[in-house]
Length: 252
Image (cartoon, rainbow, N blue to C red; front, side, top):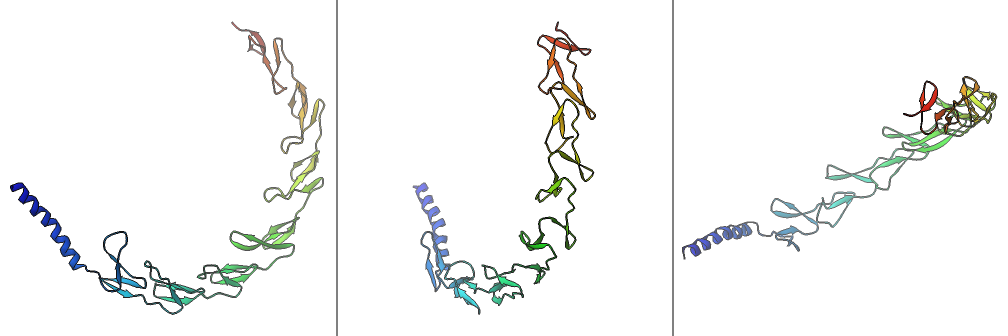
């Protein structure tokens, strides 16, 4: 019986403050009970101010959002919010336009942003407008390269052609020639070699069985019990043989 009485008092101890809290925080005017939880919230067009729901004041050049969250209003297109209290017009400079947000501006094609203005791009000779990640700019025409604020002709040496790459050397030597000191020199193929058109190296490779030695191809001497390896210019010992002092001897 004693335990039962203690239980009753314990329940009353926790329940009574809850009722008191409900009475203290009664739902004010212009509020409604929440649909999916306990308590209440201000109606559309009103915002909580201490324990009351006061009407949202929509400033000039703004419109009501009819949402229960946020300030309750947004600026009209072409205006931007300042300190959540007013909407001021976006000052678009000459050569600019409002972006889709209506709160910022961008420069038109042919202009570049400089602080709070749009400066017209002055194209040098032999250049054209190009769109980059930083806005409009200019690029030199094919056959020209930038030099300060100008486009100068690319000096293509004899036996070379423009490669059109956007990086590195703007020209490439023709087949049968290789670059040396800014010029395209003819490939001189020694005996026992063949032309190699890779973009690096001397422009030739030795035949199988020969190894490069300076500008010539020397015969690779294969000792007894050996054979040319896959490279074709070196040798390796046959199976069951091992290299020893330039020869192939039987393994122990």
